Image (cartoon, rainbow, N blue to C red):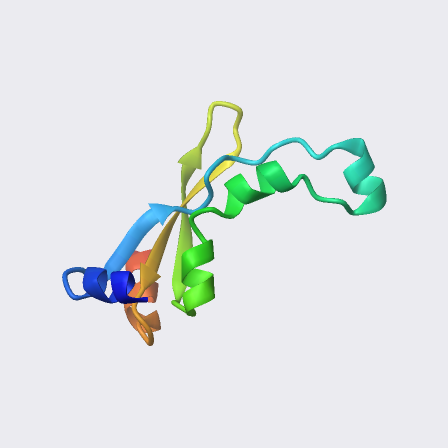
Amino acid sequence: MQIHKNIFAKADVIVAPTTGVTAYSIFDDALKTGELDYINGAALVRYQIAGNFLGLPAVTVPVGYDKEGLPIGLQFIGKPWSEPTLMHIAFAM
């Protein structure tokens, strides 16, 4: 948390990709068993984990599509209790 406190002493928000990769194919057995592909799953959430563990608010906005037409998002992570600021940023995007 100290690293994030240092960042928020200088900035109102942290801007990061929402996910580390765009969506990937779901394997047939995953649909049947509910098993996840943990390697790809970890890449999907790599930019969300710290904020979630620290209880920091965040908002994601769509910013475009990759070359295969899959959506790309940008997330804004705020300091505790900064939800109004995050909503203003998201609306402005």
